[in-house]
Length: 343
Ligand SMILES: Nc1ncnc2c1ncn2[C@@H]1O[C@H](COP(=O)(O)OP(=O)(O)OP(=O)(O)O)[C@@H](O)[C@H]1O
Ligand SMILES: [Mg+2]
Image (tube, rainbow, N blue to C red; front, side, top):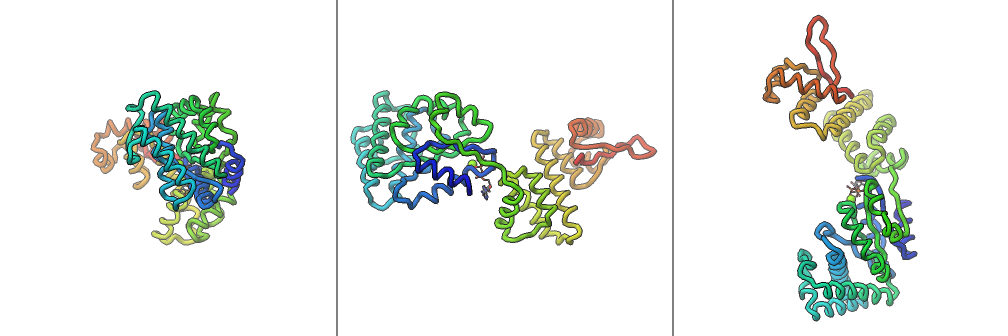
């Protein structure tokens, strides 16, 4: 994949990377892949950073990175890196700054004095530079920086120069919406490479689905529809193509029905995903119309299903029509309106 190559190249060059992509575009997968590619490379010491959500301050952040180094070096056979890391950690433990057992769940900064915080920072720089001196590049992979963009931005602002001094490479991910927040100065200069994850092209998507489903199940028109419905975002592609494949297997669609059935599944799915912000009863109405077909406010089953009277149902149906979820048609010769999915 193009993006993997870009990141590996940046890491080799010693550049910090910000990976940007929409929700579900494959940032986590990409980082996992980078880790996999680097983990046996003797020139890199790759440290995936978890539990980012528990940090509150810059000191927490450094503490977390130190623990992650420790964690990772524990998984290594006894090596120079491992000895280096352990020695530095011993200094911190000996100085009473780190507890003897490095506890992943522990929150240190509240209890740390300013001086201790500086020592942790210093020791962290030492650990990294020691590793560097052995010709090995420390690489921190930090996923989901967008979960707390302001905090991470603040931390990177205040620690920018210190982090540079470590000589380590930092790879962070964030979604498109938080990219501008993340890149406010002075953090813009911290990231020497921005790698953007783009939506999959039609051909890439077809390739991807074939591999995922281990079969070439769909007619060309259906691939086209999935591409349109998913906007080329891997998570949406996985979800919609699975949904269609499962229904197809359950209901034994004939080849002549395939396109029409798949299209109605996608249409309903779109209606449902748009309805995320609706109230519970509004969603139930959508569900009902989807499953039972066009319905009216005098539909007794629908009233019972929602446990409401006709007047209330009229309100809900009218609102759903106004929002563009349903469309109504007059039943000829009556005042009754039939509501169906607006598609
Ligand atoms: N290049 C790819 N090829 C195949 N499948 C992929 C690819 N990238 C992502 N996927 C699949 O797409 C889905 C979403 O990917 P992932 O969780 O990595 O996205 P994300 O950008 O980290 O999402 P979020 O913004 O929610 O953190 C996963 O099921 C993953 O297996
Ligand atoms: Mg992710």
